Structure formats: structure tokens, C-alpha cells
Length: 129
Figure 1 (cartoon, rainbow, N blue to C red):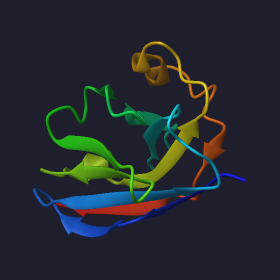
Figure 2: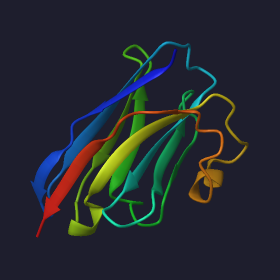
Figure 3: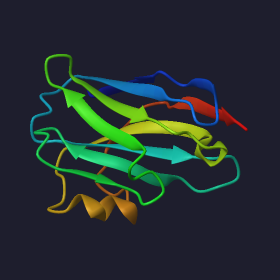
């Protein structure tokens, strides 16, 4: 059974940084794609970033490109989201998700989470102005 556990959220001032972690267990993830999504209060869940577990390709939403970096550590079975230059509009619950049969292009996740079969419970990020 796949388990995804996020950590690293918290309260940070605008301009600050946080690193989120997603510890994955229960499978061999070598063929998976992993994604970070977020949901702000009163808003729909939105795509943030994705990575193939092979690490060959990544994709970011326009709103975080250049500020956030997604990466993975194979030895630790962990995916990270390094968030720099945080803004109040980045405030949200951040979720990690796993897709066992990823699409050819990660841009797919900007419009659909279909295929992301496994989700963590989320970690709250609050950015104060």
C-alpha cells in the first residue's frame, strides 16, 4: 500500500524559504511521476510542480517557476519542494501525489490530476506579509 507523508510546512514571512518533504513508501517508485499540488482557502486545488522519479524531467506552474524547485532522493524515497521567495499568495495546504502510470508530458497535470492515484494528507504553508 502506497503511503505519502508530507512535512516541512509552517509559518514564514514573505520573501522567506521553506522546504517540503514527501516520504513515499509501499512501492518501488522508479516508474512513477510525483507531483506537488496546493489548495488555498476557498479555492480549487492547483498544480504546483511534478517530477518523474527517474529525475529526467520536471515541470512547474507559471506561478512558481523560478522560485520553487522539485527534486527527489532515491535513497530516501523522498520528494522535495524547495520554495524560495515566498509570497502571501503561496499560502495553502500543499499535497504530495503519486502517479504510477505518468503521461508522456508532465504539463498534463496543469489541467488534470487523473492518474494521481495516491495522495498525502497535506502540510500547511502560511506566508505572512
